[in-house]
Image (cartoon, rainbow, N blue to C red; front, top):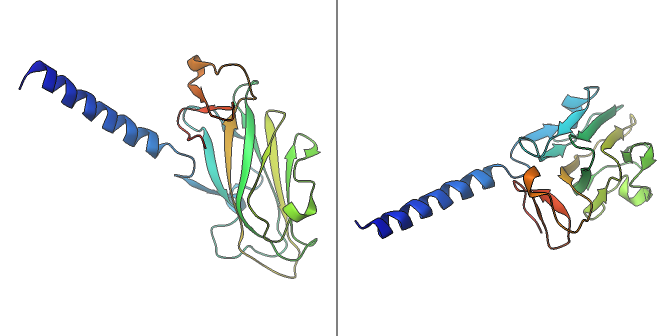
Length: 182
């Protein structure tokens, strides 16, 4: 085997390992359940070990009646923001059962069609370093809840800070190198 062939094989092997590592780090590998996180302190997304998470309302097939749960997320750096993508949602009995997403004290999903029912997927972006997700249900009905992704991002800037382990997507947002751009 020549040195050139060895170098090609070594480089291919390194790229294969790197690809496997990056794919393993995508948002959603570890599911978090809101009903298990209620009342806990802030959940910090740091960009390295935890650039984002997959969040479901409950680990069961239906959420329970009379739920009042809030989970708070924050960024590790003051320049970071959070993107919440609601991928699936099935919340019955409006306005008895509601999902609200707050950016500090400001409601991000002000449209009531994005607080209950089964809307198409939607995305909201924080303007601060903290997002709170609150779910309340009444005693009447139960549904499957929701599935969301919460990830770090930097507001649109001329270039992304490479020293913080981020890159720039086509939409000019900066995200962790461990996440995928769309």
